[in-house]
Image (cartoon, rainbow, N blue to C red; front, side, top):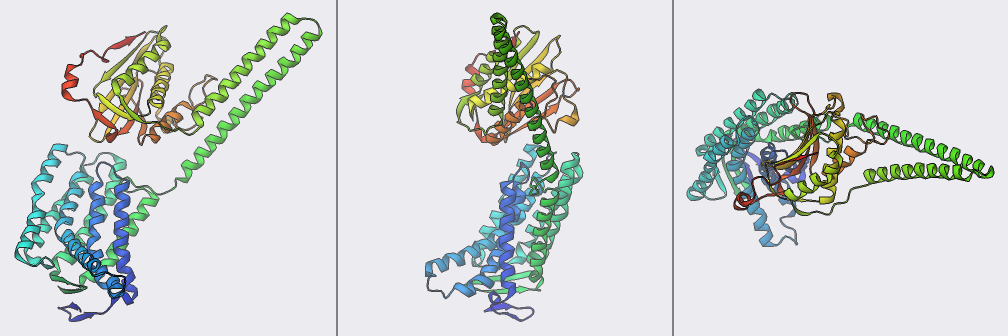
Amino acid sequence: MYDKVINEYKWKGLGESRMGIIYILMFLSLWTLGIIILASRTRSNVWVGLTVLLGGSASFAFSMHLSIMPFVQDAAWLHPVLNVILYGSTVVAMHIYFYLVPYVFFMGGLWLNEGLSYRIKLICSLVLLPGPFIMIFNHLATEPWNAFTLAWFRWWDGMYVLLGCIGYYAAYFLETNPERRRSLKRAMLIFPTVMVWAFTSDYVNFDNLKLGMWSFHLESNGMWQANFIAILGTVGLILTYSIRNGFLGIKLRIERQRLDHSIRTLTMGVSILNHSIKNEIQKIDYLAEKCSSLIRSGQSSRAAGTIEQVHTLTRHLLHMVNRIKEKAEDVVLDEEAHDIGQLIESVLDSAKTLTENRPVQLSARMEAEGTLVCDAVHIQETLSNLIRNSLDALPESGGEIVLRTVAGRREFRIEVRDNGAGIPKEHLSKIFEPFFTTKKNALNYGLGLSYCSSVMSKHGGKMLASVNEYGSGVTLSLHFPGFKYRPLAREVRHSRDASHLDHPHPS
């Protein structure tokens, strides 16, 4: 029996109507969207994804009772034990919805505030954490596990909802980064609005709910029947934002303009290569004719010199093709745990040959030591590329190049900083594109940084470029996922020589 006491309305097999499909879509869409947000997570939106995912638990419970089980409860394949498990899952889902979702929503608002220190957010999280579990334990101690009297806990949930809304609004109004502020504006408009609706319809307007074995007794004013409009509308709105503009780190749109630009850049690069190769072949053809003419006239010594010129051109051509092949082909990793100190030391040692005859100071600042799971060959080649780029940017009078290791909460990074000529800000977004180069040297094909970016992408990280604070030089940084880094044990770190790897490598 499906009762709705206040309006004395009998729920009859909604699984037999179009509404049954809508109820199923409600929890499927929320769970899918929650998983997408979690899979695309940044440091701050994990709790937002959990709010969406767990928010679908009530829709799941009602869908099972109103739509799914009316079809399958009499099926021959439905074992009694499975039937009990499915029923139990709906009761657990309602516990999650009533007692955990408001706290998770509060956590989403709290952790979106990147201006707050990690310590303050952690303290607030721990102080309010016992609340949901106290409510669950009190429920299990005072009433049947499948019956919910909302009067005694709805205002505790209301406190979490209020604090969560304050957190969302504070995150928006206190954010100074324009791009992130735009993203937070969408979150601020959507999530608090939907949560306030859910609280009003399901926490305030519910009085009592009792879930039987595929029947439920509900005392409510019926506002919850319009939840599908709010839920499906919200999912549609978030997907629209994600496709068009991006939403909390999610961007599903294929950026046509950027793709077109990359294709144009690639086409231009191929044209340049075609032109370069054609020029070299014309030179070889000319020298071959000249050599033939010299041999016919008996000038064998001059012919030998001409042949050597041909060899020089073919070596240059072969070198150019091999460089392009090495940088353009797909990167295949062979990852192992490597000592970061030894990795940096080997890069500095190999770079000495490039700085021997130049007044350049090359040094390392090891602010984080330990091991890094990576492909050492590709990472060493990447760092060597960055050092060569920095050397090219330094004036003849010399300069400084510093390698720095830094460990954060969610990432490990290696920075290469120089005080050279720098990169114009309008070029920062293009330097990782294939064939883009600001160098005038004919031996540069604009593939070095593209290769470096590809290596970092294969490692599950990213490569970023930034202009130094006072416009002097550039910092190129390799960002690795935090789980790939294991810090050095404190006792081992203290036993190391304090000057190890933290000294200059003068040229």
